[in-house]
Length: 216
Image (tube, rainbow, N blue to C red):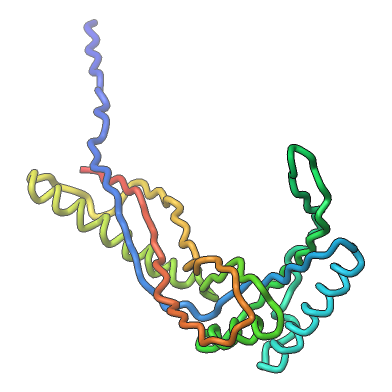
């Protein structure tokens, strides 16, 4: 008796892999400012007391603008001895005390006013200013949707050009993380002079990126 065996050869599916990108621009809806009060004295207690007095004055001035106490937080406090080098010798100059306060501003139109008020009341440094978004994830989802549409469009263009019978559904989607950094404002040392600080918050770009594989 003769037996006939048939062997089926599995062919590896052919695929098209494309990157999809999506981006939307959104106006920030709150700002975060980091103020610093820096004091120096040869006497540590004097430097600390002076610093505490000025920082309390800054906080009270911000409360008078309607900023809530829960939107203000001490972000750092440091004490460093300061030295001068004279003819190769280390000479003690005094202590430097730095108290940093992070303030959340929910009304962006008041950012310039907040800076001016804090400076007039003793803050002598703005170490950072960031514009941010609440509910950033909902905007990211919109950007992700655009990224997927972009990937599908690219795959169809390639398939149409090469006359390939591409399937409408992807067989693999890899989401690639893209962080949306807050808009940064240049750190600047401030003076006690009264001035109107111009602030332009601009737009925050929310980006999404995907890697999509289609079978044909």
